[in-house]
Image (cartoon, rainbow, N blue to C red; front, top):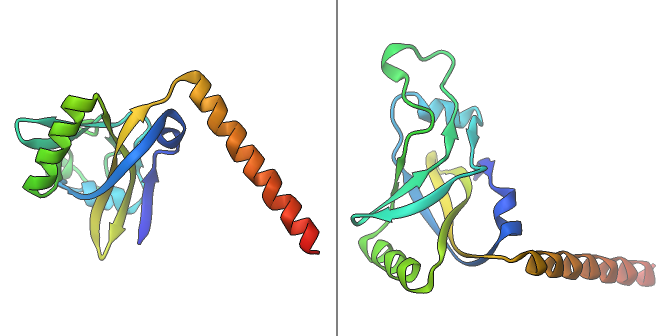
Length: 150
């Protein structure tokens, strides 16, 4: 598994409830651009629209050697490929529980581009501070245990 892009900010801004692995429909030279690592997920999100899941806000830089046919809009909406039951479940949970679909990472698995999306709930500022404090405390505990074993 080779990671192309990762949305590090998502784990800080959201509580991740559940993750899904899905395929992504690409056009032209976008696959070559992904293999070069030319994708940004910084402001990306996913949306269920008329029974289909779309990745919006992701930027795939144009492949520099593609001209004419291989060029596509770098910020276009890309269709995410999931099973019907998964799409229906996502649509229901997003509507009822006011959750968000956030892409966490894009990677190649067995030569096929995959996107890991998550059902997430937005964190408040005090929740972010609490999560940072917990993480720092666990690091200190690990350091103390490591030093004690020496």
